[in-house]
Length: 277
Ligand code: PMM
Image (cartoon, rainbow, N blue to C red):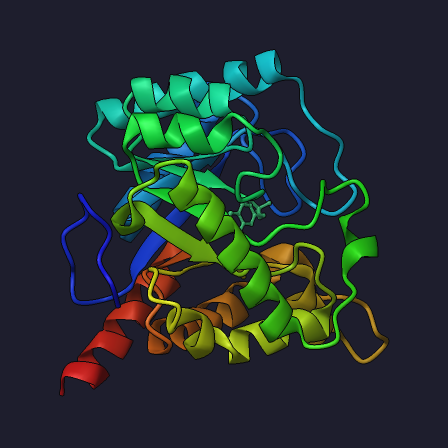
């Protein structure tokens, strides 16, 4: 598993805890600064290695949030978590939000659009000299599921991620600070997400650290539907999410992005213990 510059290797996959500073995320949301910071502290206690703070829901069908509102939501949460020593990642598609949050102490920029949503993002991150996650993305959440059209999803996601890698490097982002993410559930139907999880070793072979975010996503609700076909609700998908943390860790992922931290913190340690036995 390649290291990320500035993040010394731990000998295991990291666990990134999700802190949604939003009123409308698909599985949880913490609308006030106090609630979001308190949630981040709880995730640190559960064993999170870093916290991913986001102020814009990207659930399928979600509308965009105005830049001023996104800043209002995330900046105090980033400040509050940095103040207690947390390693904070900012989940944003906007260069301005990335810059403000890095100036407030965030150490990583997580862009679900891989630089496609804001032309200023890649040069901004290059100038900030922080690690950057480029996720596979085909368009904004409002209609992204209409873009879930693949013949060979692993090959196409790989090719599209390599385009984002080339754009990031051309903008001056240090290759040692570039992470890739297959974008589970983003312009993907369930079978696409399963194929990408099976194909993680191929994505890892691209040579960049991988971030995998599968926690509580809809394809797990479908897998675990009750006999009448009713989807399992998001908060009851955590055991399955931890099982996918094992899958990602075995494929050599750098980090898993999860809502319920403790089971994944255990899972990545189990995988590391088996590997080093
Ligand atoms: N998924 C969500 C949000 N941000 N970032 C990365 N890099 N990868 C993901 O898979 C990802 C992400 C959506 O989930 P949420 O609504 O629970 O935050």
